[in-house]
Length: 115
Length: 113
Image 1 (cartoon, rainbow over the protein chains, first blue to last red):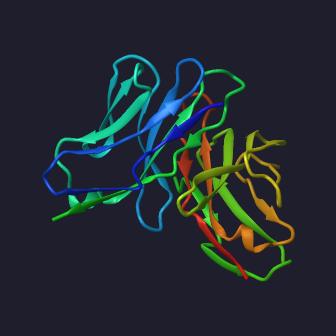
Image 2: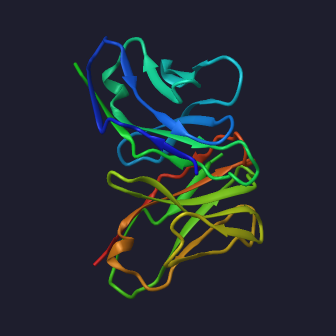
């Protein structure tokens, strides 16, 4: 069965510093991996995805994520954090086969960027 | 485009009452989904639909029903509300299934007392 884990409930970082939000996954075959962000009282918004190709994926708002097959990880990164990046971040995985058609979400990591 | 819209934004129900959460999308997406979000639990898939007239159960379907009579609408029905159904409900849609971005509505906050 496919699954995704976000080991940190909260990540705190000072504005201007680099940030990393961690995600590991378990899926048979090659995964489809996603990051979504949720601002307060809003629905989830797509940030980026990895399907195939370059392991470094660039997304919205200056975020990027690196797919590491050997470590089964897909960590979200940004070189310089902004206070406005403070939000709840969800990693999600979908298997590649027709029968694995559901997007499985992690439990979320709250990112707090301090001025 | 309005994207994915949900009504109501907030509702309080008494135990045993029923209600329908409305969801509509104007992007001509074939696939639609209902999730519930509980604190610290991420999102759990309740039901999904791959097209008009076709629905299937997700991870936590008990206590809910859905229908998909049109491409645009995907209502979620709670027949006998229970406190365990207190949650935030999100509707989402995507054009296809594999490797496609899902677009989420703003959510409906439901409190069952």
